[in-house]
Length: 506
Image 1 (tube, rainbow, N blue to C red):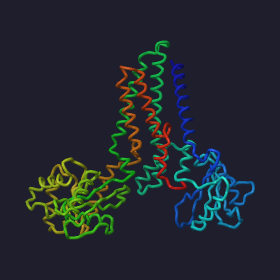
Image 2: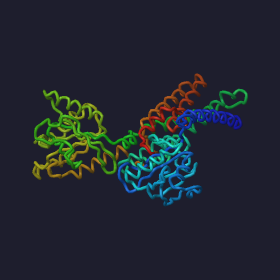
Image 3: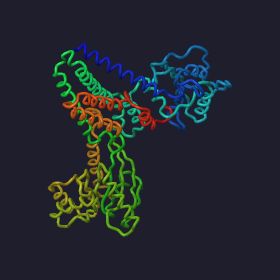
Image 4: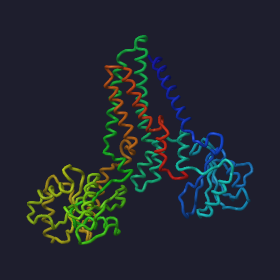
């Protein structure tokens, strides 16, 4: 039986190798084909634009060595691999000095792209950068790189899979500590290894399935083989569904938690926004209905990304413009990951025994019929006496069924630190710790392919007793869906989607 399974596994490997070869052929850069415009060596500024101390210009492709020799005036010998050497850079056409900087040589395949690469670390003045780029552009066989082309070549050389490519892109765009940690973990291959492990398990099950279909009668393959496949596929399905039930933690961490401030007019929503972001982002006025549109500001709350939105006060109005603002406010609340429901503390009933009933009714008014994550903020506590404030705290401490409640004064700042601590705890709970447990889903693309894989495994279960060939096809479809995540199986448009947000020079 082991021999037969080896035969089938070998056939599957050859089939997958054929698919990979076809994929590599389809994904070859257009510039790799000889003919007009043939220029496989690319160059670009890989560091940030604008004035800086040091700028890095990268070259990748077979003409990298000649480009390095031309600009550094080296006739034969190149620098030792991965060793920085201080050298004068000259215009290859005129011999005019361009700069004096560090040059590095990375012979393939031991480079980022897998090709021969060179780097020029020059002074970051715009004139210096422009001069070096123009000099490279004048050399035969070189052309400016397109956005993400260095990373794309690294992928095509097998240096990175698509999940690692996406992790690199996320690391470049990371703005908070938690985003950096998640991106580093994905770039290190944790997510890719998880998906690759599932792919290997599915490949093994498909091999066993095809062995049973093709050889069960001649070779007396026992029925127990299918039982093992059933158990393995069911376990894989449960793992996939558990991975999908992550509350979109990774996606939220990558794109930012949507936090919306909502409530009645003049509750202090705009004041809270301005207090948190420490600038006059929204207009504050005693006139009710001042805010007509959604005002957004990105924030870093305890290392987690938050997109905080101020919205129009919720009320019935005859003003058509304000009515549109109210509609947008309710729409934004529907889309929010977390709603900060604000209320003027003066609106709280003087009879505090009514508070446990009044506040849930107010939350229903703000949030709508469906329950969703929220914080309740009672603002303008500076208008209460110390005795009134203590009495209110006592009632709130005993009230059941309420979300976290914060007492706050945007005027004096009292309670702001406590509110930010509660907000951070809520946001952290929605994003999770990116370094703990299995790596989280970070892309809608991953989720779509995993859902298709789960559907394919459901096809296996459906046809298992009816038609083994159709059941096996379900496993094959599931394997293809997993392969599309890492780039083992895919199409050009998938790569376009992944690489389109990369900057030039990366």
